[in-house]
Image 1: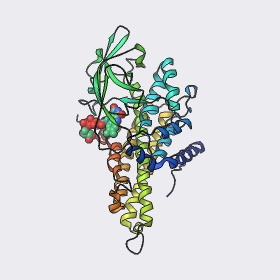
Image 2: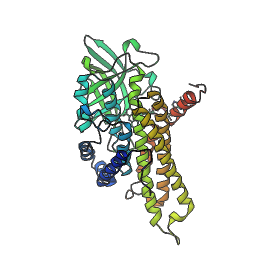
Image 3: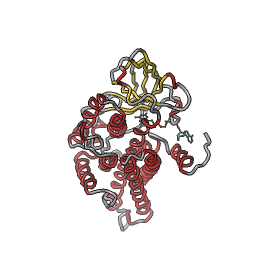
Image 4: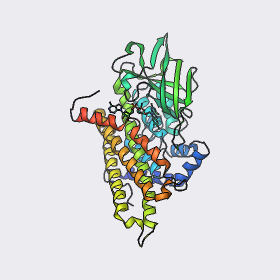
Amino acid sequence: MSTARTALETEEHQALRAAVAALGKRYGRDYMTTVIREGKHTDELWAEAAKLGYLGVNLPEEYGGGGGGMAELSIVLEELGAAGSPLLMMIVSPAICGTVIARFGTEEQKRTWLPGLADGSLTMAFGITEPDAGSNSHRITTTARRDGDDWVLTGRKVFVSGVDIADATLIVGRTEDARSGRLKPCLFIVPREAPGFGRNQIDMELHAPEKQFELVLDDVRLPANALVGDEDAGLLQLFAGLNPERIMTAAFGIGMGRFALSRAVEYARTRQVWKEPIGSHQAIAHPLATAHIDLELSRLMMQKAARLYDEGDDIGAGEAANMAKYAAGEACVKAVDQAVHTLGGNGLTREYGLASLITASRVARIAPVSREMILNYVSHQSLGLPKSY
Ligand SMILES: Cc1cc2nc3c(=O)[nH]c(=O)nc-3n(C[C@H](O)[C@H](O)[C@H](O)COP(=O)(O)OP(=O)(O)OC[C@H]3O[C@@H](n4cnc5c(N)ncnc54)[C@H](O)[C@@H]3O)c2cc1C
């Protein structure tokens, strides 16, 4: 099967792809399966990827990063995923939190967090989703109240990934003055052990080392310097982090889709129940070819989104990042579905390890913004159609 090389990428990008693919191959699915079975985390891969400069490749050089952007970071996640060992926390730690701090943080926040996010010694989670808001972030009610120089946060979050392993969580709230109406978000760094910051693991049907948590913020007192950026800067600051999140979720989906597809192709080439391998039957070959095309197309859109974002076009990147996330989510779900089907009964065995991807692939369709919300965005923003909600 052809590699992910593409004319849109520089020689450096292609070298990065090859190097990350080699690292991924050394870990691969077996490593991931063992980590999950033993209830551990991907510490070894995280540390090695960080040491090689891959986790902080998008962060500014003066704070220990690689000086690149989303183009490079998305390559890293896609290639690790294609090897069967994606690092979900890359979507939140360097991509959302690292970007927001690098763009809007104070000098002190940059010095405190960025070198650690880049060398892997610090990790951050990101919490925006709330039980009663869900896709409608304008409805979030986590509220920040000023008390002297401090901030006091109250609220609830759900489905926040990796809070147990993250040193802090970047929490999206709103100030008391902007308690209702259109969201004017403000972002706070909440240390894992801050008094009043409670977490309960959600029992997910997901076969992954990263866990999801419900969070309770019960009068969490934070110093003034916990606020990242300007309390009045609003959505711009938030989307500085959400567009990278969408680009990275696209990379996650493309990587997983490629992994599943490669397993299916290998199987279709060798499994023989009639006189030729099953891959010679077009009913098997064509859906695999379609899956390959869809993954390649999604990558093109992901590259476009990354390039626009890295060039500073936040508006253009917003549309492209949504489309890339949509395309990659759909391509991932279809590739995994077809891969499982290609293996027949073996598609559902533990040994072949594809069945658990059926649930995992759905994450790329639901989070961080669902398929329907992207279709809403494109129909309103790109096509100018009226809104129904
Ligand atoms: C594995 C996993 C990890 C996650 N990690 C994080 C994290 O780290 N941090 C974080 O903050 N969140 C995280 N999330 C949450 C995720 O972003 C949300 O699940 C997602 O935004 C959807 O919100 P919801 O689950 O409340 O669904 P809802 O908003 O309740 O939507 C339910 C369904 O209704 C549809 N729907 C809703 N409104 C409309 C509409 N107007 N038009 C058409 N259809 C509509 C949706 O598309 C969806 O299919 C994670 C979720 C998962 C599954």
